[in-house]
Picture: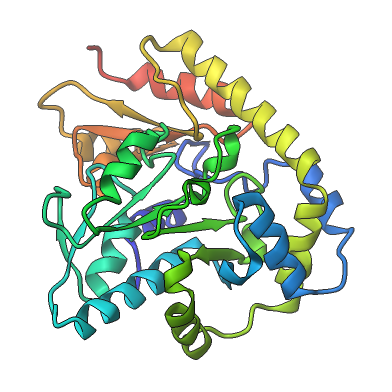
Length: 322
């Protein structure tokens, strides 16, 4: 399975002003030092470390090769459970705009995607939101997990702020996923995780054990090294994020309270954002068009590089006036 957003970003690696990469790959100077301090691979210790961050027992943490794999595996499990209940076409609510692999994976495993939560069997979304960069309020999460609806929340961006893990809400039908590739910039570690609610642990463990290869020892030891140096890594990542948010606020009015290093710039009504994206690319500026996220009314910019202020200036010179 391929995802159009990832393909778009990876097909243009040499642009001068890259405002499309939403993770800190290559941006953290403290990461190589942290990874040199690798302990012996110990999957139970890694699960326990992740569990502490989310306020859950280690038995609820399942390691994966990334958040996309975690989301796909969770959705496959939920689709199988729906089929066992006699629902061969379960519905999945995906808000718009939203990170495309969440909906794409749901459709791939048998869900029928819907844009409203009313009557849907499950909902999936990112919090902080992607592409908008804002946190989903707790009241909204609770509403989405009401009336027996299953809720899956991708929290790959959460640690850019002090926002608590949503698993701490203790909702009986809440699943969460995460990754080491965003705030830690640890793409090469290929490490993510899924956290089922307590009632889902036993059934998910069967599917996880059947379909997933063992996580490489290097990834496990790398994850433990990151947790060992987490305070240092978070300090650097959050400082860079805050500096780039300040740079954005100094140049653009009306920026929301961002909790993730992404911003959805809504363009004037009627603008062809696909053509705008291509025009930017010809000038060496890479952004993610809103059509990837289900909303062609804007483009997504990422605030993850140290060069963000100058990259943003290049973008703003071509940005349509309001």
